[in-house]
Amino acid sequence: MNFLVLVSGFIASVLAIVWLPIVNTKWWSTLKSPLVADLVVKNGTIYTSDSSLPFAEAMAIRHGKILRVGSYSSLQDFISDGTKELNLKGKVVVPGFLDSHVHFMYGGLQMARVVLRGVNSKDEFVRKVNEAARDKKEGLWILGGGWNNELWGGELPAASWIDDVTPNNPVWLSRTDGHMGLANSLALKMAGITNYTEDPVGGSVMKNCNGEPTGLLIDSAMQLLVPLIPKDSLEERRDALIRASKVALKKGVTTVVDFGRYLPDASVEPPWEDFSDVYQWADTRGEMLIRVCLFFPLETWSRLHPYMDEPLNYGLQVTEQDILSNMTMAADRSGLQVAIHAIGDRANDLILDLYDSVASSNGVKDRRFRIEHAQHLAPGGAARFGKQNIIASVQPEHMLDDADVAEKKLGVERAQRESYLFQSLLTSNALLAFGSDWPVANINPLGGIRAAMKRIPHGWKDAWIPSERITVTDALNACTISAAHACFLDEYLGSLSPGKLADFVILSSVSWDDFATEASASVEATYVSGVQAYP
Image: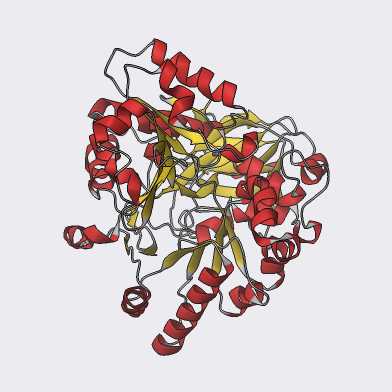
């Protein structure tokens, strides 16, 4: 198998391709001897994500690449004694999914810790921590996360919830968004956090009415405690990669974009340690299970120079607007792709203005500017994405969790006017690229497709902003060909087209019409380069 490792940035990124063979789509026509397929997939409904031939019955594969798609009779020239034939028995097949936004290693590590995603009561929260404490040797850290206080009514957790069940172990449990965490009293004591601890710049030590720390640390305040936590061992990180890869494959994901184990004000070393100790180690040993794109923080920009001749994908992280503008201008002028995170309407307008200024200054070209998240857009914002050819890299399943919160914080009218405007973006000829932000949300492209099609939040009966629902094909394209286009990989990945890598997924559905209506299928098998990788 050929695997892709890209290197890019965290807030603003620039892109180049490495370790991926360039394939001529007519590569077989120059050979004198007839080609024999290793595998022929037949008797199914194959959605190709290729507008020139959206559907096919069969597909021929050789050496990990697609020879031809079409009718079974059209593939006879490629079938010989050595060809394996896979009868789909009417099942639906789609291209391997690309998840455009994950924290891959972090998600893999979290799987071996206290998993609090989905917990909807204080009692369940405490029970899970208590279970973890029973198996821990005294003094060892109890780590975990994924909690969302909105699921149990909004009350924030406190150290007092868990102190009785963790008297001899320090605890750190991060919120689902990574911007807040809960420590128990023992951990606070170890970190020297008391009534007199002042809030650091860019963060907060939450305190009760008596001025006592509650155990919650927000943003940069987390760095008062997190450095005390022992580093994950090399074995733990390598195990995390395998664990995360298997989860991705189980969900039909064959390529991920990894934003790394990095947050602002934290150490910049973990992404580099993962690159050298885990990703490069696995790649040189032939143990990469899926394709991975890596993002590095701005502060380590100079370290990317030794890799320029390969070349690797690389990027920039910035926080101040003038620096962001200068770096974006320079990166674009050098012919590099830029992606910037923006969630709120003001932030999106700021980045749209920035991109417009850069494009005006540097001239017309195929730059494929991206905005990550693009959750809330001011009136006219969606149209600007299309007019400026900006890619909206969005996470549909966030919508299911955010609907109630958005209407509370923004007001019903504003939230319904601005939030997750998928259909408006498509109508404006903008391109959507879907991701999960795992482990903030589950890595689950079929769930994202359903969310974008149905828009029914948890606990709701009706769709939220039903006019923004999109079709199954638009949703599929957003996590296949459009996601590949969003990072200049559409020549190699994203559709089941001749010459491309044979990454595909077999779904449980035996009816395209049923799948197109409900998108309720599950993944039965995942293939990477024509080889079954799951189950």
